[in-house]
Image (tube, rainbow, N blue to C red):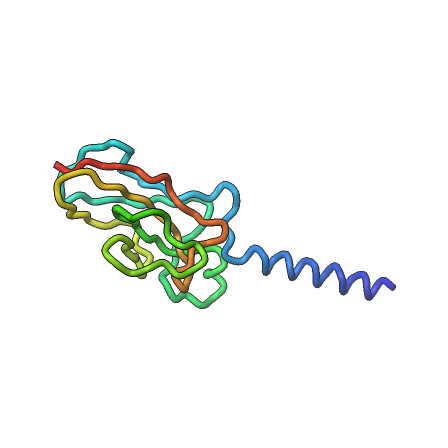
Length: 141
């Protein structure tokens, strides 16, 4: 009886650990280190990405780190919300930072622009639950 109970507990712990793969904890967050909502900027502007409670690795990472880390994507004037069940698109509204970059230089045209960070896994799929920053608006002069 003890052996079967041990097997059940071991299987349950393995299932729980697997279920947490690619799942940031409740305290994890991504944010803009040097931008705030409503800020007026001049381009080129160096944007710094922040992350807490989760790691950063390059896209395509296949070792164990992929379960506790991801890479940044920057949504620029993204229409709506990306499909969180699919890989993030690669286009002018969704910039990928495949090498694990934590900053970029923006050169946006004058006017209002929305910016938001979202973390993706090794296959560019959003984490579950999604690790996204607040959407902010900046004004480019």
